[in-house]
Image (tube, rainbow, N blue to C red; front, side, top):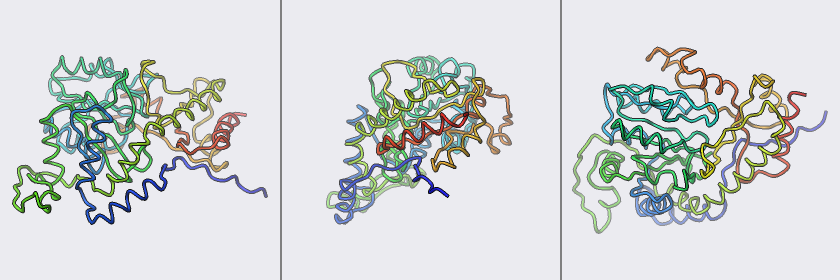
Length: 385
């Protein structure tokens, strides 16, 4: 029996001695929780995005939750978002007592648009959460115009989009609030972690307070020569802060982010070129040629209308060849909680449902070799043979 080919992982963090040395130096500093490294990381990310403010957090989920609270979203409000997203996007809406309202996605970009959002707006709509799916920016200008005209806050779920640009401007630069993820499989990682950027001093101040129990002083300032042991609790906050260990890792990763995206873009382009003549493989389309996607994912649609084999058959074909894969995402409106709580059912979002049922995410990380890329391509090309 022939030996199995070596496994191709779905993702692999790009970490070397620089990151290890930075984390070790922080451990040796004696300060490991939120402190000077966190402040340095915030400043570096703020500069990178061209944002007015940046606040480091323990997850993108925390950023989305705090953004809603800081923008005054609460009980009986409605928030419009995409159903083609991770659970956190919709869950945080429920956490603040609001109702998630799911808008249809564009059939080519797989993002929500102003045209799909507007029919979902009501007098109770307080915010829109625009998900930059796979790191491809939503068409923000018309969405911003719509939100401004209707007096609605715009929050960007940029979990996939660190380093992406919309019409030349970094994602996060011009946001009411944008939340980024630094989870292990993201373009840059701090293991676990996130960042919120905003152009609003009021939002930044609210997030700053709420991320650490609603305390008026940061812990590290209380325990330094310039701090004081006295503090006040000014709101019922959360334990959402990051640590200097995470920040030390993030500072190094941020310096490499553009090179990571360049490598991912090259691999994505190789996939597109090598599969361009496979009729049933469809890729996400860019809304504007001047946009720069972050290429967090290479998700392909196995288009049944163009003769694609069943997705389960493709998955089995990949497993037999020791190639990892994933699916991003199952529609949120069809998850049990959202069906039962809000009465959603199949057919509510036909475009989202059709596309999500045929999506497959291919392996993608900067360290992929030509041989690995060719194996993935070959697996897709031969599955229908």
